[in-house]
Amino acid sequence: MIDAADTELRDTKVHYLRMDQPLDYHGLSNSSLSLRVLERPIDVRYYLELYQGVGLNCNWLDRLVMPESELEELINQEGVWIYLFFHEDDPCGFVELVEGAGFVEILYFGLFSEYIGQGLGVPCLKQSVEKAWALEPEWLQLNTCELDNPAALDVYIRAGFKIYQERIEQRRMIRAGR
Image 1: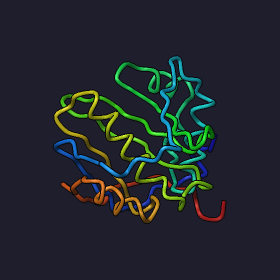
Image 2: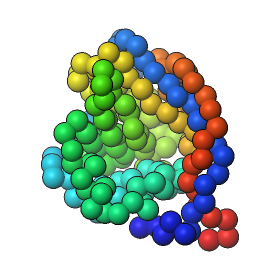
Image 3: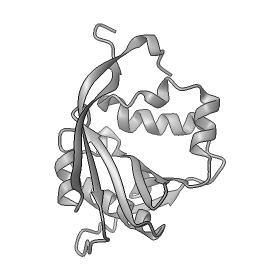
Image 4: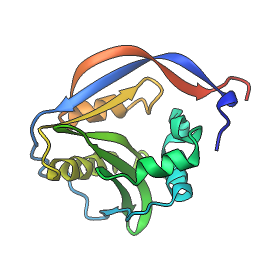
């Protein structure tokens, strides 16, 4: 866990994206990849390992400063689906899908740093999008910001998401000098 006192809020450009219909991702599959849902109840400490493993380099900090009891309730509620990506039976990342009113949000998505740059991001995103559409929403949404992996926005756009809003928001990051 990270103490909130070790973080600060910073003005950050955030891109909000959506997809209004399923796309055919023919040819983007990867036979070495599989996706497995985490069964409930999801262990908070295991979830935090995944969250940090994927997002700490991109300042995913909000759930690290959240009380564990609150996080446990959040990740185990109905309409939240957390899947692990496996590459040749080794965990390589995760995605968290959250059902909303008419939509599914890809709330968190990413690979562990040692798997970035191996051509797995797009096939993992494809599988995530297919799982999200299987929940039968009217649209999908996600957001990314300038603190995220520099390639993230381009990958989402190439996957068929379109930016519908951009704005400056306060995002948490590790305090300088920590």
